[in-house]
Length: 232
Ligand SMILES: [Zn+2]
Ligand SMILES: [Zn+2]
Image (tube, rainbow, N blue to C red; front, top):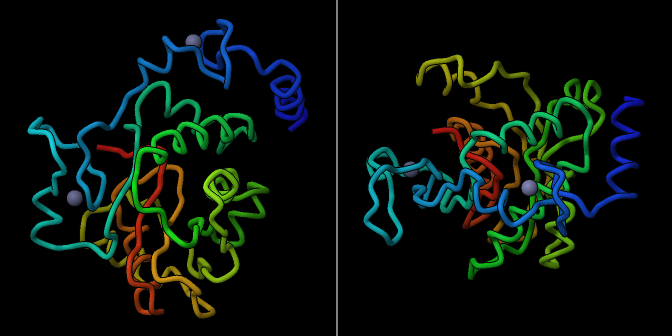
């Protein structure tokens, strides 16, 4: 913790270097490193899954065509690959909140180019015991600067994670559905028709879909997902 505090203070004092290669840089990344990031340039419009086709335009993957998810639109600029995975790991597990601010800024740069902004941002909630353990919710840390940047209010009070879930990636499709069912509760009416869920990584899409399903039951019409990275 002391180490991460010192790191956070250092990055505030000396912000003009690239977090990846130490070259002089504005806003935390040099142009070279920014160019080499693993962009998710061909992701499914609904779930963000990287597609191998390079047809251009906006595509929907086969799975989303057959089983339309509760999420209407996923905006996920990066693949969960080096060095984005490392930055996310440092942010999430080593308390390096400065890496979170950089990731939030990169996500925001991608969102700048999108036309329809939501009326409300909802960070994907952590289970209270996980929150106690970590000390902060990484999704909320990502969402706060985005809310300020796009002037969108934040709601981190209405959605709760009421059940502990096992990591989704270790399970098969049926187990994943069972694992995540009923994991969230929406405790009060949502004052928006169009919301965006904010999270760090989308792995299978089941988590954000379950929360989107609950939000739609609570009257929300459109649910987008804003996340930093998508696993293939
Ligand atoms: Zn660099
Ligand atoms: Zn899809």
